[in-house]
Image (cartoon, rainbow, N blue to C red; front, side, top):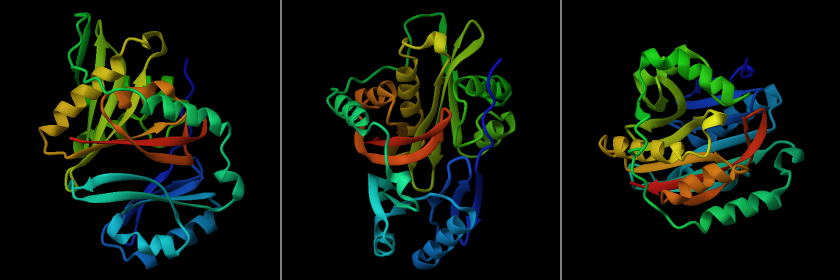
Length: 284
């Protein structure tokens, strides 16, 4: 038996912008601005947040469009250099709508994990796994039911509906490449490369390993395979938004040469509660 994830937030468009919002994360997330006029867009998303009673606005913004957000009282929490076609930085802005949303539990522990990861020396990991009983491979639509079950077992909650086979097949067909580790015909670990081909960046995300297979270094091999794959598709910049409280996932990215880009306070509902997230990035 496994616990089913809570219902995910909604993804929709306001003006020409792509946003995610809903009670799961208790926030509005501006994912892409598109051609929206910054001032009008800020007004719209703040109005939405007020109507719904959300407690945070989180915005990913090109550096050249950042002035309107700063003037509106937004604070920068992170950045990814060269996010847009390797030429323009992305700034991650926030506005907290209640004081408690900005107050982290045990921030000293998160600081220690960040310091530990930043001290790690990069060690490039080959995508191949020496143990012949493991097969690391791209996933395909027929894998979707098994993938959704694995994700539901690992994550009690998640910001996107990766526990739904239809969602996995839909994103496979559009902009996400999924990868898995198979052992004796069964998927035991997964990850995904969510690409923005136009802006030439990729989010390395959706890492999940069944508990009995943790400690095998499977995520390292998946990340290496994803990098090899997206480089062949002319992707210039990779990044991730990883749980700040997970030493393991932060160390994985640090070992692979990713740089720390900042911490997003109480940002994402993952594994059953809203947690702070670390941004890591790497030019490819």
